[in-house]
Image (cartoon, rainbow, N blue to C red):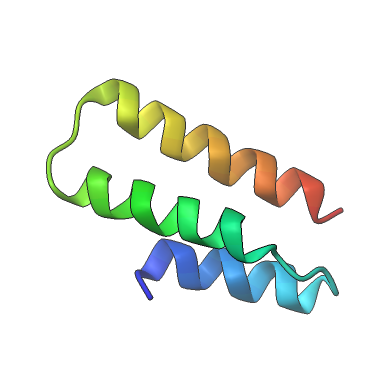
Length: 58
């Protein structure tokens, strides 16, 4: 599991919220795209998804 996805997973687990598998998979795929020098738009989408997933854990 990529580091950002692992942090996201751990954060939501400790907050008592289980991420749906689909959301975790989407975050992991966006992380992979970002690591392979993806466009800035893809990076923005990845950061927005991460922000929304964190916000939904509260």
